[in-house]
Length: 518
Image 1 (cartoon, rainbow, N blue to C red):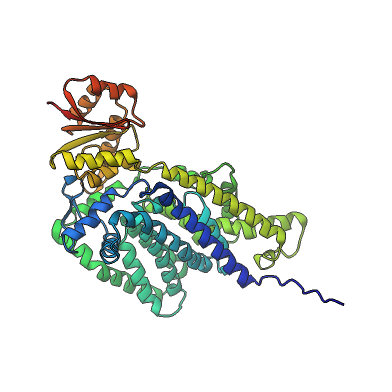
Image 2 (tube, rainbow, N blue to C red):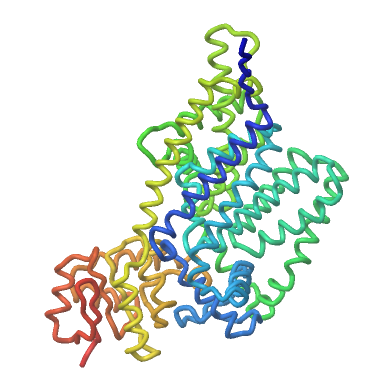
């Protein structure tokens, strides 16, 4: 008689590794897709390109100002990403522009692994950590801001925030004393990576101490980590203080969107979603409810904390604890509810569920659905990329207009922070742009919001007289007008074409450039 081999099922550890591997592969696909499809860094990054190039001019010395937009903007931005990009560009002979296309999605892909380490600790389960990482990897919206050109700094800030929380948690749990050094390293790199990461990292470390510290030893260790972080980062902030004093930091801290109502922001965090099916809001509600029942108070409070610390950056940070709650809902909350309804005793746990073909089938279906939605989300990022005609116009302007020329780009976009043309114009055309918002956070402080409203108003103009009235009201004068015709009304294009005060010096089907006067 033939003996049939019994099919061997995966062990829980093998299932965990497989799920984490799938999360990494598919997470990398959705993160690299926008840059591959666009052939250019999505959305923003122009200011960072200038800051990377500035390090070449300064021979790696920290400049006092950045050349971006000729505004004497203090070079006060945390510089880790710029230095790394400059170094890689010089060593590997890769252009800084290409690095802005590839480094952000690469670093953000590494964040999936860092998120796995942290979620496994906080959920006290590697399988749950892997499931949370799978949700994090393909949830639309978790990666958007990190894979753009401007994600060079945001992605590093995210990565080191996660690693800082992991190291500090392990330190407060009484693990190896080596976690003091790792905590200082990761917290220091978070400080050197992104302004908002500084606030969010400090906040989560304080929350970790309140829940898992509260002893003399952990208080002493926290002081050591804090002091070590200050010392580690002192070459940067010490240089900035010697250049500018506290002014740039006091100015930038006023731009955190602190007027946003907390409950409104939390409602958006829970019920907002990218996609056609409200799967994630449902899982978030179940996860929060189950988390409260199981006293997962740290994770729930971490959802709220980012909105108290820095509302502008809060959604991208709140995704971390929220995704852990989603995994908790999927693997424990819903099975527990089913067990209660059907009077099963005891409740089925993930240690048993992973063997179920039905459970794995549901995981697969939800994962694929989120992967598809993330791909569609990536397509929207591609649509926020500079077009070839716009790049061609910037090159012409750089080669054919005076270096001290002052331009007013008109694009029709009423959201200046996600208008790629006005953001990249000062870096690629190397000319002053009066309708660019980037960099003003270091100059205008709270006045940046007034400038934001002014720039949104400008892009609604439909005539020359409207543009000129805007210029007179804001005292933002110009010598040249650049019109990208994709989204501006035709009446505006015709208005400049007919006005004898403006001379056409460049015109294509997509972009017009006018000089004020003859």
